[in-house]
Length: 64
Image (cartoon, rainbow, N blue to C red; front, side, top):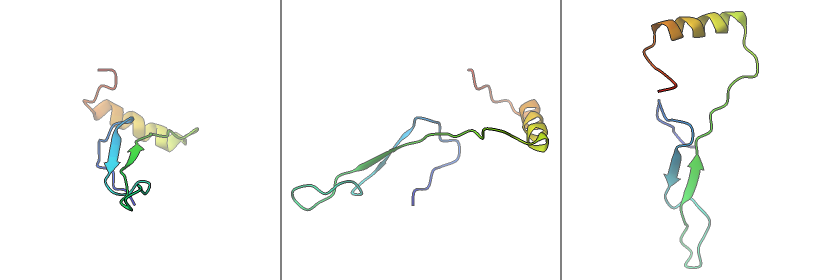
């Protein structure tokens, strides 16, 4: 189980110490997980309206 903090950006690499493959000395290496964001292939009209409301109120600029 991996907890990802809110506002984590796509492409962020998370390091999980000691959870990787075993080494020769019986210890485990580190596991690295890359955050990948998935977008739904289709949305309902209600979802679209809610996203438009959020975009109108938000100060976030994804391009900048």
